[in-house]
Length: 440
Image 1 (cartoon, helix red, strand yellow):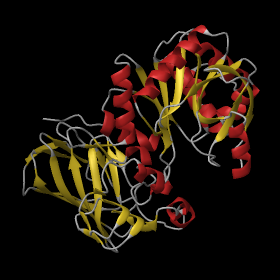
Image 2 (cartoon, one colour):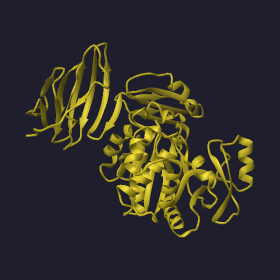
Image 3 (spheres, rainbow, N blue to C red):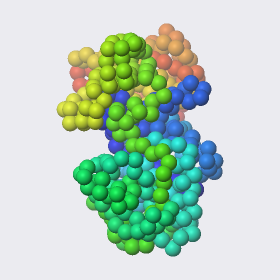
Image 4 (tube, rainbow, N blue to C red):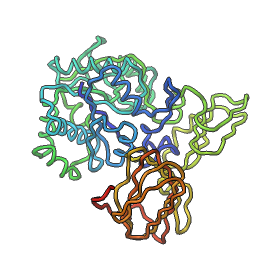
């Protein structure tokens, strides 16, 4: 299979674990058989591989998510980076052009598109293989997956098939309805539109050229910011006449809120927390190094991270976004391709950060114009490079870098450091990358 996974959004409804850099699909909440925690993107990647070990997986995403993807999946997946956000049709057009021009996928090959963050079991991925086969063999230009609804929802669009057969022509689409309309749609046999579909690559490229003036992938990428924001449903799906839908009745959940996310958590506590015996239907996710104690609470979610602390009734947690939009602060935790960082203190003229580098990885070789930095190694070994001069580092090593000094660190083992940034004008954009000629 050729699969495009759409990875977008900041997931503010899962604040404080999600932020502008770490979207909900990168939060590690799902426990594996070996007692490790993995994220939504890691889980869905492993599930695809278990069903189709040879699948070609491409993630269409924003530049801000590339580091998290590389951190969690390594170099095992293709990444098609959107220069800026332009909704699902431009993203899918760019990814399709990337597959054709850069990966040499032929126009007659089927492509499956799905979101990166649903909670599903193995049957879903077997269904994707069926969708792939239908796209290859059918005369239809588009084959959708319609999710058998389990309740009338106002969150999803609806697909109304012509028949109740496992695969049917599509009669019509319905936008996200009110509750009464959703009940009426379900009584008529409507299916949830989960944003999962398949097509032959040549069909999508033809549609892209009809709606966008471009020559190839490079041209489309360079002019991406000028494209109108338009959804794939509006641009293509609702206008296509040769379209069919395949029913899917397996487990499928959109984990977009704390309420739905806690429904699939295998244990009530992740991190340091204690619930007394009078707590009922309480979940705690604690990323801090301090304990959380809950007593006599009911139907509550508690989440703590360097970004903040949430204590909410589970049903009310669905309405978090407008409140989170009022916050304005520096991102305090992020995963990078080389490791991760956590802000542990912010002063008037200083920021203190705990940095973790993965074995064999390094930061970009860079400098800052408006701040000095001091790094103190607390564990691990490696080497620091300052203005092309190499020095070994180990626990207790202190590296001082005045403004303008070019620097990087290369980790031999996992390397943990305390980084102190000092200056009157500390900004995230105060970073100049340089070419590194000396590594020994």
